[in-house]
Length: 233
Image (cartoon, rainbow, N blue to C red; front, side):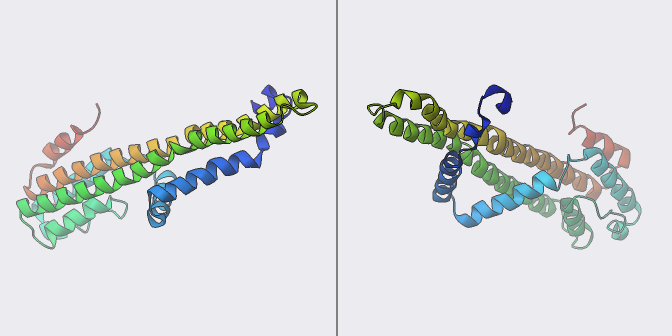
């Protein structure tokens, strides 16, 4: 699209616009958040974007139902049948139920506190990327402003009118990069992190209710139907 809409596509390869947008965004991000938090946010988002697909709620319900069937007859062996691919939160909850023998109130409080803590950490990550996504357009406008100032300073010189068009195009490249990085990189990352966090929150609540029903030794069919009520039809 760029090559077909411009007579000289090289104008978009101006490194000054990239430096102003990305350099300014990184500088302000470091003023807003400590480096360790930014580095952690980048590590986490890499894992979430590259290392995990959609959550398979139906598969998790099957794992919970199978664990419930075993727990009704032999509680001590309920951990043995849990697959390695099961959600870590389910493994931890079942360990507290089977090995530690927590009662319903204590186990429920621990699981809920874990869910609330994970949700807060996820929202902190979303806040980092949401904040960063606001900066590139502003720095793109800043780059365009700097370019326009430089252009206006030369209008009185001989041959200035021939340089107006190319100079304005170069000045607006920074705005182009600001909008591009914001709308094609940072905002999608922010939305993806938020979506993954929302899916994980649903999964953890589903697991919490499943463990509670397993502890009560409810019928596996009831557990299956109850947990499916968490999902879209």
